[in-house]
Length: 321
Length: 243
Image (tube, rainbow over all chains, first blue to last red; front, side, top):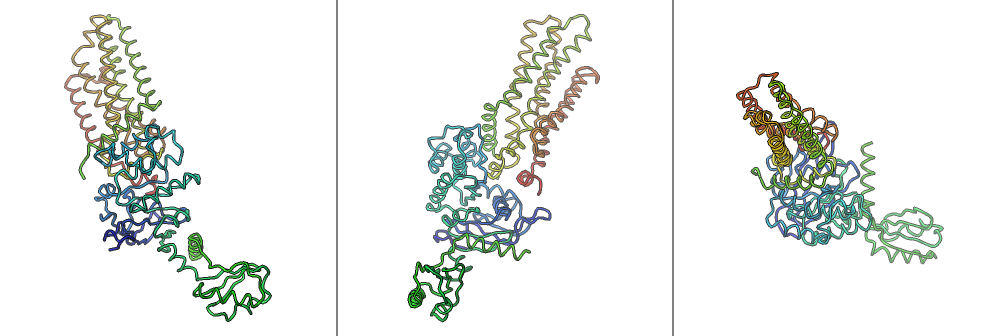
């Protein structure tokens, strides 16, 4: 049993245990285990072909796993429970997949019928309001831009008020403005406590939107909060820049309290490995002033999720060689 | 989860809305029937009442033309039904709803069946009306013979049913819309061939035989959706056959 980040509901929205999917000889993903709490936005990162979409399709009961088990919205994943699971979740695929000759409203009405929803008009209107598309309800989907189509697809995914919303590369192929709009909509859903499983290879997207992320490259490489992953992968460090290279950096940094080592990536630029950046920075500044250096900056090294991702994928590629 | 007519209705409504705005569908539903009703009318008005066997042959050809309509029209529609959605990328969003494959298939089948029956029976009515008003009395009495009318009324839905299930089955296993359409047209022809043999008296026609064949076709149609449902593999449709 897991608790969501807000501790709102005791059970986990998704429990995946040792799930594996193979297509003949090819392994899409292998021995993947994780949990997602209710109200959590969970990012599933990985390079192309890592198995992200296959995982979404498996959890959406479109593909049967080769082995392992899962519970989706409290329902065990099995052939017999497929329709029940699909009634409790929604998936927004990478391609919006709209009926282009039908209007926005007609597309949503069709899906409201497929979910056997009551008060179809009200549900459609609510979904359209959620994605700010009320004024385009009567437009044929074929006349909409790619960004607007993506918003219609998101409205469609919200129709049944899903317990878990799967978003598969929701901003793939969108221009920055349209992607920003979709991010804002997802942020709004997150703030409303909707459980979201977001696959993406856009790291800034995951960092901005997700409570936790998992990095997949056929196998699950790492899972945790973005800041946790940074801490786990990278030692704490101070980035130091001076106007001119120090004549004897070893003499300045060696033996400084709290500094366990140092590197010089480029002349005039130094990375000091420290246990506590706040505690070490004043001593480093004093030592540099004492050595007559012109200090440009002393800042704590900040590793982005991208650094974490690239590091992990590179390590994984190395390990597979 | 039980069979839901609400979900069938959702698919049916969506299909009919889509048909109305699809030029290819409008063309298929109008050009073919128009061609065959024109051919039928030509047959009707060029019949000379000189010899009885010749008269029966000509009327048999007319009736056969009319039966081509419920055979060909749905095959063009249903061949597109699964592979077309897959090519458009609209199949996956539908399959991730709670819809069961049987509901999806019945929705698709009804969407082809309903307009086909409307078109076929309307044109048969037009044919009967034109015969009544303008054909020679001997021709009219031959056309209104009970067995001819019965064959039209009975075989129109049965032939349409066969075409629909063959079309959907082929569409569910195809990867290309055009190939599916060509195959579906060929696959719809065998029962029509049988009807042709009856129409031209190659197989001596009798009401009993016609009813027997109709009953056989009804059974095949009845089991058609189960056979097609077995061909409808979600995993294969999603992954393009690599599963």
